[in-house]
Length: 278
Image (cartoon, rainbow, N blue to C red; front, top):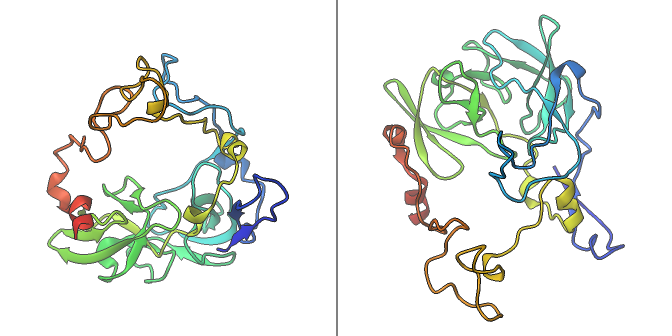
């Protein structure tokens, strides 16, 4: 996927880039696979803001994506669509029973391609099969963590994991973060790389474009009053915090580890922090 440059007709357009949508074949989604998505503006069921800097934005419909694609399915790609709810593109596929599904579009996937799911599927990009049937060294995406639950990791644009080893009932995967993790061999995964790989290189360019995405402005803590942030207060000017950086609620941040879940440590062969140190 290429990046589209804009002429500097305005200050906001100068330096702005956007995605090349030439690979998108359908602008209108399948109505039966779309749901109304109500904007929550970062609020929970009590109406209190739990995620800051959210609100506004263009209205969206949620696309029901099939992250599972049951074994035995043989589907034909009928088009590539834009999904406003994720960075990756989605593919409209029609299975052998005439049913439509949305799946994550892999890199190079195009109209007319045939994808298969199951242990007997060929080792080709876009096909979905148990990790036990995938050759060591292959790159995969949309990977299950629990057999039958559907893909949970490597679903964003341009992401992939590499199958580095198989040992007893588990496979070792090198994830995009550098973490090496064990996953059961009977979990399903899709061969290839998620499409729209240039997504991370897009330059937003203007504040209004960010607002239409539903993201509100963010203000630095050092510019706030002392009552609003641990970094706030002072007699003007930008001063150092005088202590370790903290969140608005006083929690240490920027390097302070807050992971408390211990039950999945047994599946992590090498953490992402160890990978970065090397």
